[in-house]
Image (cartoon, rainbow, N blue to C red):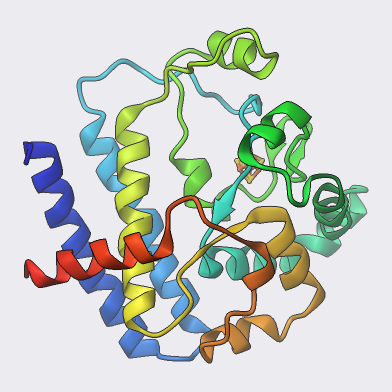
Length: 247
Ligand code: SF4
């Protein structure tokens, strides 16, 4: 096992413990969403900063949304927090002519059922890009946080189908993976659904029915129709159990 995988394992277990404490403290209360996502976002930012020390500067910048045509997946707590955020900012954005729930439903209707490669080919921008900016930036999914590029010209070439490989920051992808997987493992241990869901389909559901948050907190698999299986769930569960057994 390499040093990187050893430190990733320690990071996973530490995070798993923090998530577990928050899930047990807040149980089925709405506050649990805030608690676990604050752990996820702060852990991601702090660790990525450490792991990027000494590496070249990123080429991502505000106003560039070139990668925001990719399919995005996220966990249920991320989706439910996004739904909360959208409801809160909806009046202010409507005053600027931006109807986020309608945009999400529209993109869902255009992209539902497309594979990851089909989604790339469709080049459908994310519904949250407005004037080149992500309008839900503070609560954007871990998947978005984990994509950072060293060369935005290559991103543009990839978006137009001229190149395949983008020079993504490896620490961003690795830290995102550990932060998300530890969260999924802790949700599983708390007997909450722990899958990954397609952003627009899951959000359309969560925005149409405000009761989904409390039902998810009670253990219901409320976003099931939007679930995607990037990795076999049985294989993931087996890995989580093996990591627990190493403790
Ligand atoms: S949520 Fe924000 S960062 Fe993520 S794809 Fe959409 S616009 Fe881009």
